[in-house]
Image (cartoon, rainbow, N blue to C red; front, side, top):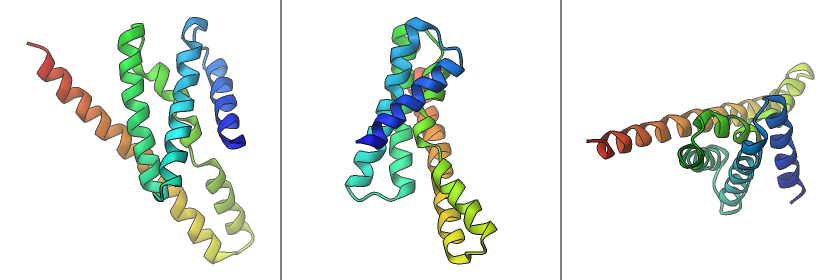
Length: 141
């Protein structure tokens, strides 16, 4: 629970850093809530790092597209701050620490986790973008 609250605080801080307009601040911070809780829910159900990140990113992209249409704002405004909780900062730090301290086995473990997290973020964004484009092309006459 404390991790989730820190994710929300980090998302809010990045919203301020990215100069998100005040009237869009709450939906943007809620995007971080969506991604953090989706990731934790997937992991609690036994999903690996890649799967949990992929599913959380799919949900975040869907949320961003929906609220971008409702609020008439760019989807990236919701997507960028909302993806902050998914970034592999901790595993990247530990990976580099293990590299410096010559802990080869732990280095490989954290390097794998970092790459899988990044791949989950990228693939989730791409798959979501493809579905949105297909849906919008079918919806328009």
